[in-house]
Each structure stands twice: as structure tokens, then as C-alpha cells.
Length: 259
Image 1 (cartoon, helix red, strand yellow):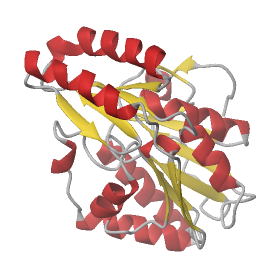
Image 2 (cartoon, rainbow, N blue to C red; image 1 turned 180 degrees about the horizontal axis):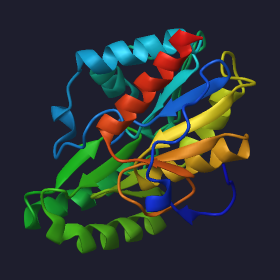
Image 3 (cartoon, rainbow, N blue to C red; image 1 turned 180 degrees about the vertical axis):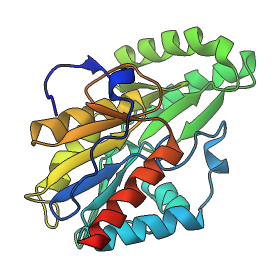
């Protein structure tokens, strides 16, 4: 796998990437757009029997070296995944649960309340905008009001500068975060601990927020897998959608079972 600067994961890399050898790999999986289809309302994503079963089987096959690294809060990840995964990074790395080590959380920025008040003003103009409060960040979702995108981006860029927050752009969402670790930092923290230490990291994700995860995996002799349409990315392989991710992971388990 080529590593280094961002490249375009084009049609040449659209085939499923090589199956990760489960004996020496560590899997880092995004949730929305990777393990679950994107929903206009995040709360509409529910547990699925197939997903819970797949994650539990992966955890067993990899000796626990499976982590979910999500923009959602940790409690919401547990709700959707039926607590099938012990190692979880929530709010893009501002929450981290290490196996056997409990939960670490960043201290929320005092500026988040002011950011929320400002973002609420957008809802008055575009009722389709949804403001999500994750305690450590405030997200403005505009999937149901795409015409508001430019205004959301302009306001969140200004608030980030004025309030000392981190702007995290995503797919039809702009999020203002407490300063602190990102998804790449979460990968590095997990890779420093058992049972992840010494394995080859494979990060699978769909959004711009996953680019730091791709870069962190590549820096540790691993690689990233982009889910969705081609774009400029640090990932070196691509899967088409959630169904393709499921099939790829099932295939890796099947190969492991034949060894």
C-alpha cells in the first residue's frame, strides 16, 4: 500500500482492498456511513442484529483489537452497537474508552454555550437545520436544508475563531469542538495499549473527519480504507458503501476460519 500525501481514491482502487490478516491487524471503524447508513436524523440509527453479531465475531477473531472511532458520543455508540465493542472513541476522540481502563473525557469548553446560542439563530431561518449538543461539541446538521450550507460554514468558521473552538467539517454538517484529540489521536492512544500494541492498524471510514485516522494508520505501517465515492484522501483503498464494508469484513472472517 502506498503511504504519504493525500491521493485520489479513484476507480482504480474501487475494488475491495486486500483482506486484512486478522492474526496481526487492528481494526478501527467509523460508525455512520461505514457500519450504518447515513440518516438525516442521527437518532434514527438503531441497533441491527447483523452488525452487533459481526462486531462480536470480529472482536473474538482479533483478540479484542477492534475499535469504533466515531463523531457520536460514546453513550450513543453503545446504544447503536449494543455495547458490542469495548474500545470506543467518541466525539472524534474527545472521549476514549480503553479496554480495562475506563473512560477518559476532555473537559468541555466553556465557549460551547455561546456557540449553541449563535447556531440556534440559523434554525429560525432554516427550520431544516438540526443542532446536536454532544456536551463536548455542538454540531449543525443541514442535510435537510442544503441551501443553508454556505451560511452554516460562514458562521461556524467565525465562531471557531472568536471562541477558540475547533471547526470539524463533515458531510452536510459543521461541528464546533472542544480543543483536544482527534480521530488520529484516538488511533495513536489505542495503539499504545494492549491488545492493540504491535498490530497493523486498518482504519475504515467515509467522512472528512476520518482523514486523521487514515493518516495515523499509515504512519504506523497500516492503511486507510475510504467508504463511498472517490475523493482526495489519505486512504489507499476504497469500498463502495456500508454493504461492501460488511461483505469485506465477513470475507476476512471466513478466511480466518479456514486457517
